[in-house]
Image (cartoon, rainbow, N blue to C red):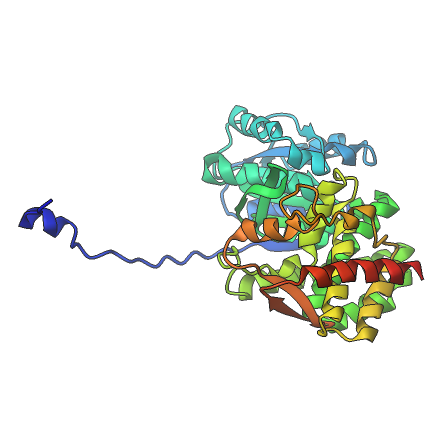
Length: 401
């Protein structure tokens, strides 16, 4: 085929390059008894946009929370009536299932979109998500995809959500048997941590959230890990003052990473804040989500710390201190599903498929964070599966003795 000059010139136009910078700003607020009438935190936050008309606020609440806070709905409605010049509820608060079930049922996403449409929300309206991390992930995804983004205020009600998932920029749901296959990077309008919600948590849920604190301490702050280690007994007996210090430091470290890592939306291949998570996500799936996320993360931390030790990166004393701290906090660090090590890596129940799925989530080369020492992570791009099998065996042996 021969091109004439006019045809040829159409393909010689120079590409246009444009750089676009977008600034995100959001705050993490700390309070107690958020919906008491004398607590103006939420009302002041909504008026901070300096728009004078009352704002529509659609409230979505974790059903599991109401079992322990049965008066919350009435309290919330009374609060909005008290601040009627600022807040208006276009429809009654919506109650949906919490826990991982919220992220496994894609029909819930459509239902939330229907509620948003029925309430006639706009981009200047607010979606108030009250619940655990799974519910916040789901509602955050709905908020980010309706009208290309509705203002989201997260009110996390678990330790894990307050010190980890709620303060970040990720939203998502599970699909095709994979964690967070569908989702967005969309910062919230704000996060409000209310310590009163933590008082009614079960011991299991209280403990579960501490795993994420251990994680971020191990890869970023040795002094913070020492604080957790020296206050293990206080955390086990549910000392709220100590827990608040843990949650506050977690929020600081997460926000510092998001703001200063150079890759807040994970455009590369690195996920340092997901230390221990490749195995954790797979174990959640292999146990049909009977493991809490934090419980699975604790196992993933123990496994990757053991692998780091066998690889010669982490010294023996620090490896033992990590395992002893997790055990003292009450975590079970070995489950039978760790033995799902089929030679066929494509087998859906093979633990090591978690490595492939972890890599697929971002693309690019496999990038895992391991430990060089407590407080300092190191990225690797290759793994030795035979050494990981040894790590699993060593972990089981150490815990048994």
